[in-house]
Image (cartoon, rainbow, N blue to C red; front, side, top):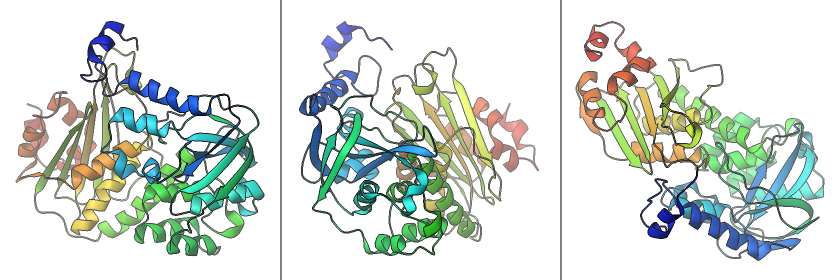
Length: 412
């Protein structure tokens, strides 16, 4: 996307005159500032939050990247999605791009009997707080940033020559116990961690570095796969519980508008049904050059789904947020979740964005209605796509109106 320089001169990062929800100039400048601190150098030292990224290219051999910013102190916010949601987008992106990565190529099965450098990376990933880290590289830091639909951004990288760790905070007790239990399978380990209050973002890091599961089967898991695996498996366990709860007794509508995104949730008094849909405007992240709005939708019935949704990891990131709130209510419902993404939001920053926004929305205020028609009439006030278009695409609405003439009325 080309931006008229005259707009930047007039705006100076204040008014979003370019239409983006972040300032690309400030993001770039902040990233360059970080690179100047390490540019031309073959080493970096700082306080890793801790942070690790695992690639998927070349599987079953992969690159594992321990990461640290070139700063010392309390860097935990760099790995805390709950704090990211309240940051300006350019501040979030530039802070994440400060995480300088060292790469090591290993076999995924090395996790169960790791060489020294992989063992040190695993120990770093287990730590509860920032780890003082020194990395020496084979050559000066360079390479592209990571901007990905699944994982949060990461800074540039270089092949790792050595890694030295100091001031290692011990892992939380439950993490230490799960790590040491080599007879506990990965799904049970994830569930135990989650029920003990460990956030799914941390659980996905532990799964990715191969410290969960049966000892003989432990392996490294690429970060993007680990994120979706945790959201999926944990939400499956939540669903097993939610299906035993009584139905809610009303229609609830939640709305959240944030940074060129509108999130909508409708909870209906019905046994579990679920859909997640995204509408991408021309000029948004995954529809930069299109001429029309593109809508994608995936869904499931009472027993869930067996196939991976074509819409990707956001499906499970939103699903876990819905099931968390239903479990807290001790109620069951059919869930309709729609998201509209407008021009200006054109930077992939990870599925955490969906998970945390849906969590925030469902833990916020809502409107109550006696029937679906009233709920949809209310929802239409917040959407740019005509409500009839959304209704025509919705799997859950078809199921809710199957035994009535309500669908015909809604489409009038």
